[in-house]
Length: 271
Image (tube, rainbow, N blue to C red; front, top):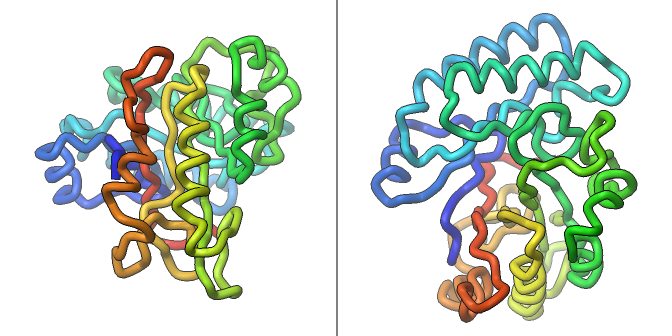
């Protein structure tokens, strides 16, 4: 489908999966499942289990990034809670201590307090708004001061224009199910999906400010029908066309970026 990696969302993957990712050259973002609350017990368990996951998996060359937190889950009061910010910073630095060879995204999606990559979750279904929000370097001060794609500030603290690479680490989420009971971040008819996906990816690929992107998501899961494949892995439009839309006809043409192009994988509903 034109992707060079996967973001394993809220899941430590089985070693057999990582073995085949190593063999096939598939890049993997490894992310810790989130606690629901910030408590002494959740801090102790998350720290211990995250350390064990890194010790088990750091020798897999497929892993290109570590993500201890996602969307402030388990640390819901980061803007107002010094202890929660210290917790994210502590796990960021612990991860860098246990493996100093890979980038660490302290809290992916928004409210970054310690990170090597600014990960942004933006499910705006209008490509023109995406283009305006991320179209040029001079927009970065506004982006980090005022824009709230997920309803949250993207970075916390006094830094107005962080120096880290920017990755649109969740985008898309287009549902094209005919069933009204299912869910996605935006919706279209099944016969419109190929056009919507192609237009969105054309816009995202054109944004030189981005170092990569992750499309949500690989396949439909339960009520969340925003996959590129149905739950039984039937493509929603032909695989060759999905690949062309993901990569573009000529991804190495002048002015084009060659980004980290990751598809989001989940094994349970995100919401």
